[in-house]
Length: 263
Image (cartoon, rainbow, N blue to C red):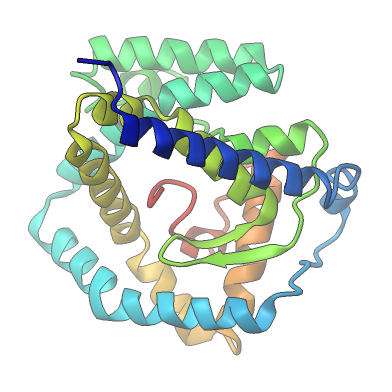
């Protein structure tokens, strides 16, 4: 039996084609603006009417389903359990973080991430405990959207993706690359056990959203324009991540979907 069936081969080919289209589109919309975007607070949002429609859908879905599920999760699980889930999910993503560090030329960061993976996998019970973080090696997220920024690609225009939430043209292309290259997805799909990948996504997204219940509630209550507040917070957080600056400002914490889940 061949390693990959014909339907899966066709799907892979289509995925690759879509990926290349996204990458080329990013390349043609801001190759020289990655540095200049660091010095402005403006967000390029030419699709605002469409984005607001998708945002309204996401917000309704969140209020009706995701937020209640997150509150139940918080109620039923103790702090140490949620910490273990977060540590485990972060550990699963470490190979992608290492790869993006290397692509960015950050070999010190790649070394730290690699050491974190080994230490937490072996000494932290498959990553359930952040032993490395407790010993001076904190978790630092890296993704292909950040890699594109380091390479000089501009962020392009702002996008709101269904369910996933706030993004940009550059980050959407980066998300596509990270999704295709995700070792968990490759393992699950090649073994016809796709449920592993989807379960990981659901658990990761729920855990992330559960940590933001208070921050999202406060942003909704205190923002004159909730859409504009999320758009600004997302842009500031992503630009901070590109600069390797701590992005954990109160508003930035309320941007829930992209950074740690829902891929």
